[in-house]
Structure formats: structure tokens, C-alpha cells
Image 1 (cartoon, helix red, strand yellow):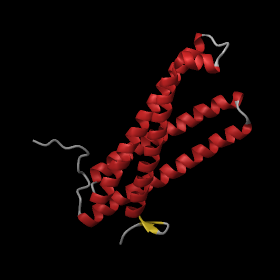
Image 2 (cartoon, one colour):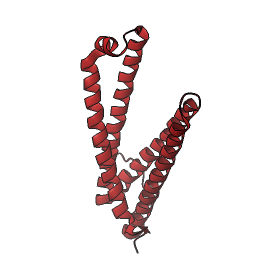
Image 3 (tube, helix red, strand yellow):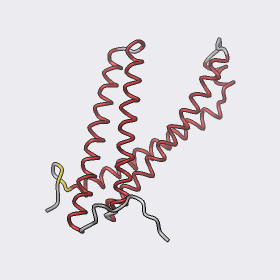
Image 4 (cartoon, rainbow, N blue to C red):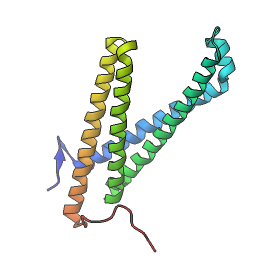
Length: 178
């Protein structure tokens, strides 16, 4: 008998999670690319003249830092897109290796997200309103809940595949082919 989460089987949930990850990271990648191109075309000097009339070189170094952060976010979104596709392929083809790789990615992403929200929350104590701090707390809760459900569903799918197909539990994550 197939395991289920709420109303649907874990295979369907895993497929839905994969598609959500693919769509969200694709939209994020497009938006970050547009923003990055716009900032690069605007350039630090035009930005300085337009937005920072009395600014010093600190504004230019902040601009460069923001460009680097956008590039980092874009790379993370593209990696997320790749892992979303990996999850989809793993769910559809019952590929335990792909599912395990996605689990590692999801767990690392969840730890990173919690740390990032914690750092932002710590900084927000002194500089932001209580509404923004509550927003950060809600963001952390949603991240943990969604990632927790996703990890649970994928782990359950792996167990279901092993039970129905007799997959070897000791199967190595990466194998060498001659």
C-alpha cells in the first residue's frame, strides 16, 4: 500500500514539490537576471549620481557588494532549478540516487535558510520595526514547514520505492562505472 500525506500519495507530493521548486526558481532566476542586467547597465557612477548625490566611494563599494550578492543569489536559484529537475526526474523514474542527492541539497538549504533568517533577525532587532521582525519569524516558520514536509515526503517516497521494487538499502550514493 502506498504511503500518503494528507490526501495524496508521496509520489504525487514529490512531483508537486519538484514542479513548485522548478517554477519558483525559474521565476527567481529570470527576475534576478533582469535586476542584475539593469544594475550593471546603470553602473556605479550613474547610480551614484542618480541616487547618492552626496555619497562617497562607500556607495560605489556597496553597489559592487550588492552586485556580487545578486550574482550569488542567481547562482543559488540556478542550482535550485537544477535540483528541482533532479527531484522531478528522481520521482518519475524512481531513481533513489537522485532523490537522495535532492535530500542532501534540501537539508543544506534549510540549515542555510534558518541561519540567514536568524542573522537577519538579529540585525533587525536594532534597525527594523517589530512588523519586520515578525515577518522574518513567519518566513522562517514557512521555510521550516515547507522544507520539512518536502523532506518527509521524499524520504517516504524512497522507502516506498525500496519496498515495492526491492532496491538494495546499502546501495552507494555514487557508483564508479568502468
